[in-house]
Length: 336
Ligand code: NAP
Ligand code: GFB
Image (cartoon, rainbow, N blue to C red; front, side, top):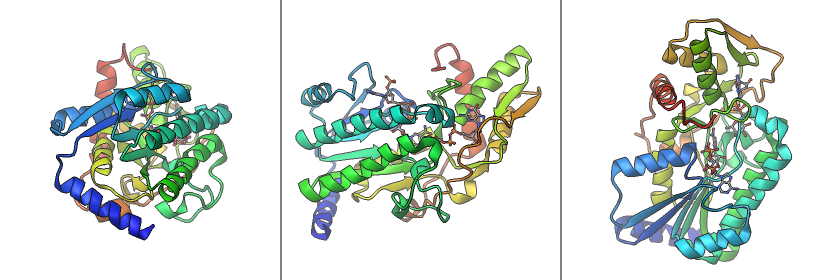
């Protein structure tokens, strides 16, 4: 493995050195929160002359269908894949559908990596999540801890399916010499999020609920105690890091893409940030009959900082304001 890694480093360095190698990049999950952020960054930074990008959603191909995936790869012939597509959701969606989260994501992930292998994809970057780490753990969590114990029970289906991506990546490296790797984002938010109140994550749900409460003059209902702690990364910051991983990162082992431990906030602080950004002045009610989920999943971004010591994250309040403004401007067409 170490000789292979050295070879990859040379290959990757030569690739980095001469960015003349043509890259046909397929982004699965390209119509979602993270995919749309990557598309925005790629379009705003200006495309590299040797790169062409395809962003696909489920209408382009149902990635649970093995044959459809092979036909997609045969048509597009990608050299690089950013694999985002998944059944995704917040705490309450996971609590209600652990089996679906496991089965659908296992199918999607196995189909994508098998097609990457069959069609000679040079590099595939898949997406895990900080919520998949062991629930009983020491802090801060780091990349070496993915498999060291069962995940929080609320999302075991999603978590085990995500962990199998790391197992598949190791298998493809060992048996086929493939460069398939993964990143581990903390909670993500930003424009084009999923604002559905049953399936969505906490920040898009709060933004949606605060918008309606302000419009109708009703109280803002927050679930749980507001005490759990989360690290939140702005989707546009994550997008820049994802593009860097695709172009420069050459390890098979995953890398956490998260704000620092010191940027962790409570759900209550997240509520305050949304309320301030949307200028809601009504009553806020915490419904403590609803689940809190995992209390904390504090992750270290030390490995990322070793590679990118100067990367600047958008300040949380600024990112929340931009996300709220996007939702207000796009209320009619937003996913909700
Ligand atoms: P999202 O907004 O829900 O988007 C999901 C994407 O996957 C959409 O483009 C969707 O297509 C596509 N998709 C779902 N099922 C599919 C299928 N059967 N065939 C083809 N495409 C399918 O999700 P996201 O928040 O951007 O998440 C992207 C990745 O980041 C996921 O792997 C997720 O696990 C990971 N992640 C997310 C968070 C977070 O807080 N959001 C945190 C950590 C990791 P349609 O648009 O057609 O439905
Ligand atoms: O983003 P979220 O749904 O998922 O956050 P997790 C759940 C936390 O926010 C809980 C509180 O403490 C909830 O009580 N909360 C308050 C709300 N109001 C609301 C609301 O209206 N909607 C929601 N959804 N929460 C997820 C994992 O965990 O993290 C997923 O289950 C995924 O698999 C995601 O990986 C990144 O952060 O708790």
